[in-house]
Length: 108
View 1 (tube, rainbow, N blue to C red):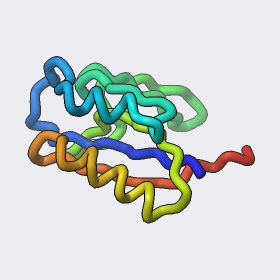
View 2: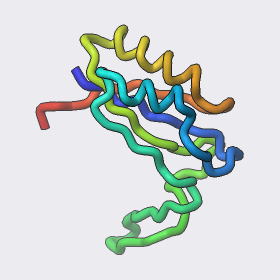
View 3: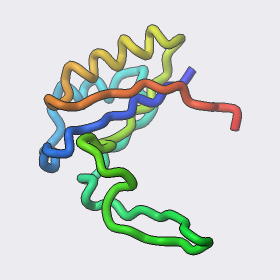
């Protein structure tokens, strides 16, 4: 089964620098099937609808202390295995970050 590891970063953390070698090594592992890092939340543009009109606003959709930092897609036999993989990543994340583990719908 595939799981999304959704990384949230503290909004106070500035743009991340180069990836740590140990994180790159884990991302190259057999369980990881894809991943992306996102630019700082300030670079976002949000589309929404109000009164039937599409609105564009600068910045993320929500005003929060934590912002979406990236996604890692992993293949795991079950939730326990996905949590073990996520724990390895979480140990390497910046202070103030969180990692959500969510099953991916694969049947459309």
